[in-house]
Length: 236
Ligand code: C5P
Image 1: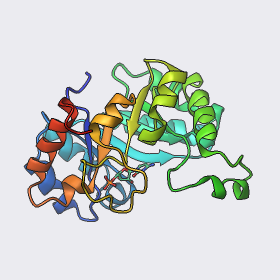
Image 2: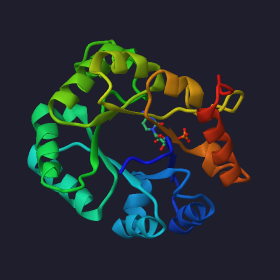
Image 3: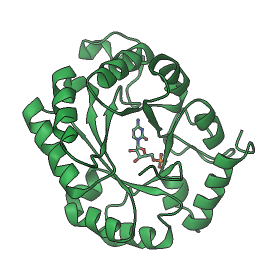
Image 4: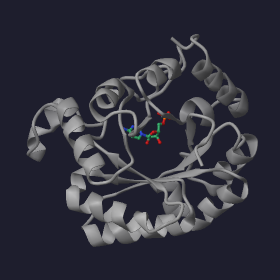
């Protein structure tokens, strides 16, 4: 099932009760939810089950990166939980991503497999020390190609890379972009933000948004306003 809303709210909370309280205040009609490493390490699979009971689609953002057999097994565990999306690091290599895709292919309703290309916390200048070429954007495109050829259904990328990847990889690939802010909103620690409208126009399918909703005095209102920016040209 394809969700009707492009917003994925990042449930970045150290505390299960706070995460569930936010889920109660929002609505599965208006957003999907993302569980990351911190919340999952604290709360485990029951957190996913709690959100499913409330009707949410869940992106399990654990960024698997290991040998192919281990990542395939982890992806099967995510599929058994019934999550909507799961992700792996493209730098784990073609065989690792292919093993993940193959593991999910056996499910009737598999999660969409996403690949992380280059972490946006890494700049060009960080890459040579890792033995990588000092051009994060070119590397992101190369890894996104590798990921889709290996069977991934999409990539997580900066909204700034969305139009490049959309142009190179075509309409089928799902682009999920963090670093989204309403016009005039504070950027927090995100350096290169984009508005919802600009990110969607650049080719993003889903927008990952955390603090502008989780830290808002009225999270539901903040979500509704961001959705409004997605539906109109006012978010430019
Ligand atoms: O609060 P904010 O909207 O900045 O949260 C963005 C979310 O997207 C966080 O969960 C963050 O870990 C995640 N993310 C990101 N940049 C990436 C990949 C994921 O900000 N490149």
